[in-house]
Amino acid sequence: MDMKSVLGLSLAFGVFASPVVRAELPDVVGLREIATAGTNNQTLTVTGTHLIEGAVRKTGTGAWTVPAATIFSGSRAAWDVLAGSVALTGIGAGNEMELAAAPTAVLNQAALWMAADENVIYTDNGGVNEVSAWLDVREPDTAAPYIYTRAVSKTTFTNAVPELKTSGAGPDNALPYLWFGGYHSGRWMDWTDPSDASKHLNTIHHAFVVHGTHDSYGYFLGITESDTTTYPLDFRKDDYDSATGAEGMIWENAAYGYTATALRTGRTFLNRSLVDGATTPVPRGYQLIGAEVGCRPANAGNFFNCRNLFPGTGARVGGDRLCEAVIFTNRLSETDRVKVEHYLWQKWFGRAPQSPVGLNVASGATATFDWDAAETLDFQTQGDGCLVKQGVGGLRMAVDNRTPLSAFNGSLALEGGEIDARLPVPVAVTGGNTYSSEAMMLYHATAAAGKAVKTGSGELVVSGVPADVTLEVRQGLLNIAQPLAAAFPAEMRGAGDQRRRARAAELQRPAARRHGALQWREPDRRDRQIHAP
Image 1: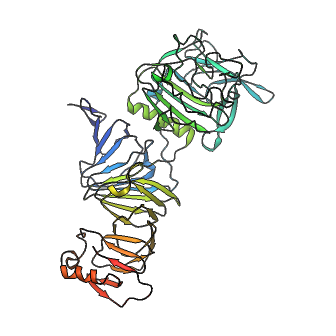
Image 2: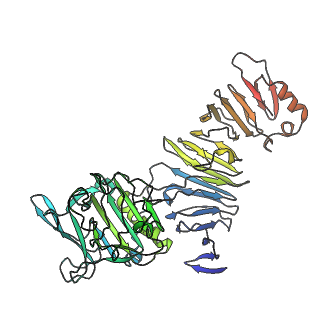
Image 3: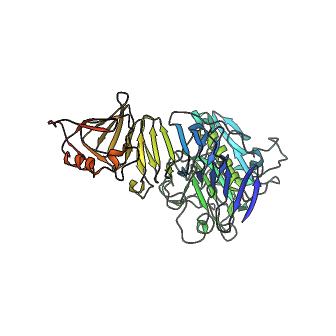
């Protein structure tokens, strides 16, 4: 195994393994990477901006506080808390991330880079901004001679050309976009080199495109030539013959050529999440599509023209809205890919953070998830440690999209909001809290200091009660989990007479347990049962 130091981080590479990053919390963790952090046992509050697409594994005895505004996770991969504690705070509270600087060193490697807010050449024709050319962002002058590839409007099929709309895109709809008249409109732009010749890029490795499919979906990266043996149509979309072109998948699900060899052997990211483009429907509205090709480079040579197929029912020239396109003919590192993605996302979609989808907690470790929005969030967890739920929002819990929560063997501390666990979860109760259980839903409310109250007709499974807390059961079923947690006083953990006493009193309800001593009273009509296995 080789060890390399890059920007102060140690990278370990195995023959078939993902790179493992060893640092506190790296600025970028790619989708193929595992970041093992916390080995120095520091207690800290995370600051700055961290783009986390891969796996984070917190080790060491330190306690981390991670404000929501410091994290963006397009993949939303769950973090592993192997030791110490991690608290994700302020999630859903409307915080914004810091505005990241454009990764200029990476963007300057692009073979083509066009943005609707830079270098658009147009004429105002009665209030319609008719676009004649779209220059590269890096082009220093709007007049010839040019240095970079540019896009030029063509009137091959119609006299109408793309239009510049000065607003309607980006955060608060304040940014411009180019409108191509809709699918089948015949409007398109040819890529042209500085000598005015058509420019096909046939070694594309990465394409990032911000576009809008509000009314239709066209071939936003097309080819002009009909000879597909020379220029394969790699960015081949699905649903070519409908009125909108938007009723199918992002890419055609073809077993032959085209996307089968370039895109389908690579990776497609929709709004920063990895998807199968051949089985993912085209979403309406603005979106960021990132394509990383696989077994061979891809080809493209224009915006919104599929092999000059026009007119007729199979017309494939024209499209909807185009905001920015960045295309690379070199292979980017995973870190650079994530940086470009983040730059485009913040510019066109805003600076709202995005947290991991969940926290996996090892035995002896603690993870806190503070969800402050008044809605229910899907949340994944597994392990044997303690999960603390804070905030007013609700969590709908599972191990992952396919596995029920039964693989979670730890305990839950509910300090706010509600939990939809789909089955009873052991709760480490604390003083000053009321736990209401109804139909596998667990709700939190306050109670008097030093008192923990069980209400609701459902079951509450208890993993532990501090010795100085009074436990009062007003409704439903209380189940003391086995093996009994060490937090219970000794007379409740191993003394057979106490366990037999609890079992014999199964239909009674304790008024309270004060400092470890059980105190009983006669049951009345409101009483349900307590079960101690």
